[in-house]
Image (cartoon, rainbow, N blue to C red; front, top):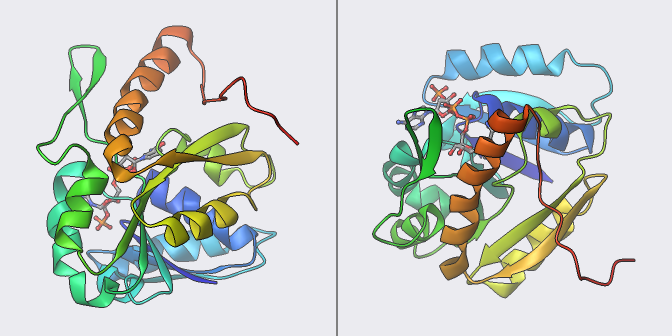
Length: 218
Ligand SMILES: NC(=O)c1ccc[n+]([C@@H]2O[C@H](COP(=O)([O-])OP(=O)(O)OC[C@H]3O[C@@H](n4cnc5c(N)ncnc54)[C@H](OP(=O)(O)O)[C@@H]3O)[C@@H](O)[C@H]2O)c1
């Protein structure tokens, strides 16, 4: 699949690009600055073992891919999405974005008027199919593609087909298990939980992830 990553030069975007390219996808890694995107993609592309490609492009060109991930800071996300509305029309847009703020030593969630970052994206992309996923998976785990990602991922969307397609894609990542997290109305709870996990990581010097108990597993 051809996959775009808006905000692809950061920790989350570049790790996701590596993981997707390791699975054979062709990734268009986006940035506000094409030179920066090319610099990052050149570095990532030199990694051995990738079955697909990583090409550095503008966020505009990344939004031209079949399916597009958003890996931007929360406060730049809605305006970036709105500026790409035409390119993203009719497509699945996957948000990893968490609205968080550091208060003293602690990370805390910010509760947005729309309820979640994912809902604020859907509001400016009425013709796209917004899905929220991967909020809790640390960039490092995502990028270390020779290792499985030992985590469940809660996937929220108001669009059943889009959610199913994203879950199928995520389930190709070794170790990762996607779970139907319901509509985008539930994404706020998922996004906010990220603050709790980051605080656990700091407190216990760990890299935590979510596993839901009580489910029948294969
Ligand atoms: N890091 C993780 O482990 C992790 C895991 C799961 C989810 N997330 C979420 O993923 C998102 C990105 O996290 P990150 O750690 O990768 O953050 P980051 O490195 O701070 O930012 C990612 C990229 O976004 C672009 N950017 C910065 N400000 C922007 C703005 N105002 N408008 C548009 N683009 C902007 C930058 O790329 P250019 O300057 O090249 O445009 C930057 O490299 C966050 O919402 C975070 O909560 C992170």
